[in-house]
Length: 245
Length: 169
Ligand SMILES: [Zn+2]
Image (cartoon, rainbow over all chains, first blue to last red; front, side, top):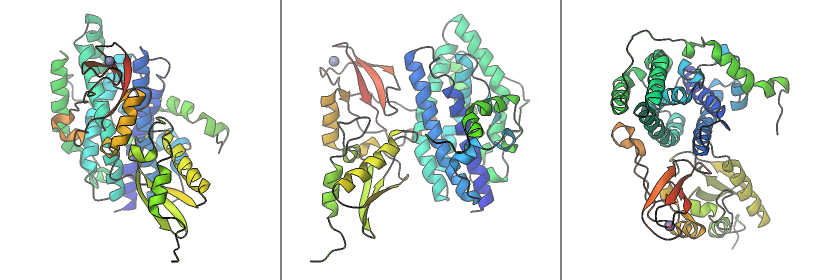
């Protein structure tokens, strides 16, 4: 296994999980109901666990002595390799669930594929994470249906959220050599689209059209939102380097 | 007989039976199915542990508790983490499941193969077999996530009491 591809790929996986976890963590104490607060926090915690495993592996592959914490807390936005989708703001509950659903519907089948990877460390992390991602997908899918097929107001908001985030979905399937060393994400697109179409049909939502897709996260070109997220997430380690508790 | 190991592996397994899971203390770490292997390496006991959920904050505490418990029995010990194969509630002991039920937590049934193996990644989160309070089988899910990642919140439709369900995983 080419260590550079392993580094690049595990960094992407880790950054996706870390940034989405941080976004979900912003809901803590603000969820619309106690059960939702718990569910969001639990999902965030699962993703944080995934991020730790992927970033540890990235540090190992890189071989420059950086550990998971250094990778998480001491890189600037331009060095992050997450999808633009996961750094988008929480917005209302429909936005949070649309972002989650688009991501989960990609993340879960991707992890299932990676669980068969020849690189044993990738396969082990993916097999572990896939079991949790299956629950995430189950939950976000049901929320899309519940809000889409709910009241007039919830339907309007869910449709608006689905459209707003749609241009960030194309990046999930755009591959380069680091991706292809493990799985070609383009192969996941037909299944993802079928999953989203079936759910939107149940949710009485219209599948957004328009082919223009935003890209850049995997190369370190991010929306301005990531910088704000990192400023909060990294504050302590930046202000007090090496602080522990 | 001279042996490098001051105690047998069977004795270590017995001692581990006394180490409670920090979040669900009616279960020992052995009941929970997270101790995968015990061996002797270079004069110390090595306990191989697998995490329950990836982000479970109890994982580090469990490792510390295991090492502490074995040291209290006078042997040097360390833990090693093993990710694969991933933990499943199918590794939980029958004794552990019964302890959960008596504690008021509905124990997990058999886990569905790998959840994603079903078409479209559809997960059927199985229902608890019975209310742990009154034994009635009619229950409803209040929240798929409960007080810890491993549990969901349910309500009994007969006695109306809420209860935790240890999710099949
Ligand atoms: Zn009952």
